[in-house]
Length: 151
Image (tube, rainbow, N blue to C red):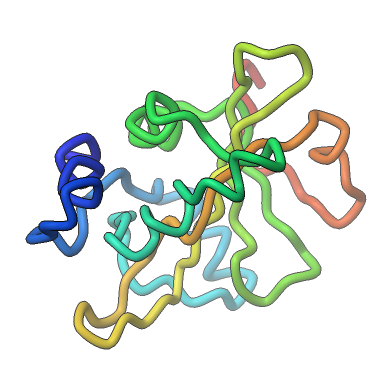
């Protein structure tokens, strides 16, 4: 479905407003609720606006943008991330799903907003942005690891 949405954006003929790309696990929802972080929906969506934001050329030029294949792969990353992190410092955009990239020491980071309000779509849990980060940035002292592959 992301592939179709990307095509619509390229053709400037957008009919799809949002696509479901994943779900928060019950354990993640419980963790967030225990931290008083509101969760609007269990389902995670990617909106047209969000997809345009994360696929911008200037993001790619500075080395932080995802390839088209990586964008299409967002549902798989959300389904089986290498690591899920909670940023204790932020009150919003504090849930990060990360997966190894094929390039040494680089990770794909998907930032989730569990309490987003879109005027035309209502209250949703959204992919707010995504990009490339270096592995050492995942070791920030403000981050709390919620899940880790193989743990």
